Length: 218
Image 1 (cartoon, helix red, strand yellow):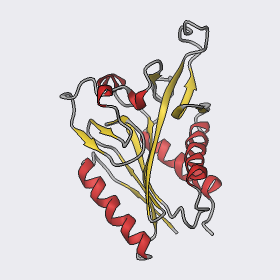
Image 2 (image 1 turned 45 degrees about the vertical axis):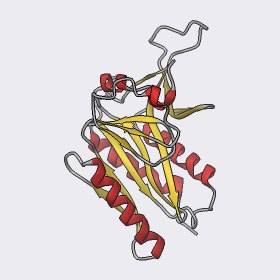
Image 3 (image 1 turned 120 degrees about the vertical axis):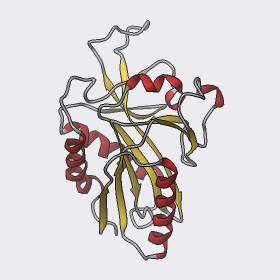
Image 4 (image 1 turned 180 degrees about the vertical axis):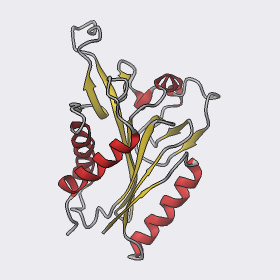
């Protein structure tokens, strides 16, 4: 079974790290079920294992935490649904790349519930949406903005960290970093796309699409 938990209010980031560490150890021992934990954080930046210090362009703006997950710098804050994914990847195929593709597919399926087409781009981590209403790039390409980030870590084949979907965050807060080291693309959110979507709507969509992507572990 997968336990689903939704935390109200803003969850302290260090508390979240402690909860994940504790739960991952319990899952690995066989003492706890897998878990999907939905939270919001106060404004903060996190650095992954590949973070370039130069990409933290405003280090004094918000607290900065070492996330010990894959990836580079990212922002978390109110209006963003952070989904901590604590699943037994060992029982779910023991294939890290396939697991990341499942996370991407889960985000895409969730966005589809709101008639938003999320896409994956080679060399760019996360999920992207085309913005044909914006000016094209110098090469004539359609503008693309990032709507969701993905970053995980595994311990004894149990995953933690996970995904974040921009529902209605303050997009200006992303300006203190180079998100995921990508300089020539912007960020967006469901509300920025003109959709009157609430956090609760996203939570329902995540729950409805989960089994279709992840199924039941072997």
